[in-house]
Length: 180
Image 1: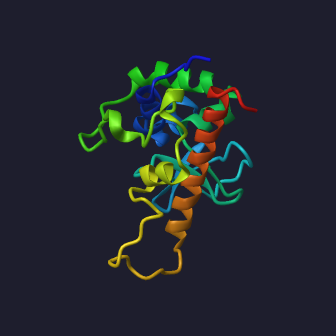
Image 2: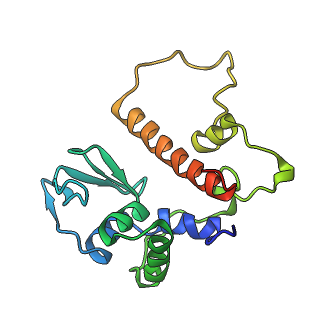
């Protein structure tokens, strides 16, 4: 099975098309500013206890506790599969308004590993995937490591985001290896 998209295309569709632009303009989801916070109607539960975080390019519904990236949002609202949602975002990427210079570039090494590894390179250990996602090998400990602290809501949200990304990676790997 050949891949439909390069890592660069997936990165751009997921990270470089602002989630607020997708919600307001591409998908025309009812939205408003309330108390200085951008709110939108959740495509899953229709609740309005929602927000977007531009730093991670994610949106969240606090009512149903669901995070959405740009691809997820297109899948839910347009009732499309993953491939069609990515194609839709790539097609509309050219219509984006000019972005501030602070938008991240898309270097080839942004992703922690290649999904299309050749079988000769062998399997990827889970700690390699996690270290690419969180920036440090979680199995390595040094004397300088700080003592453990209670997780904050931000830590929990970050772990939920990582778990969601890992779930997507595992699904991609299963399809790539024809395992179901």
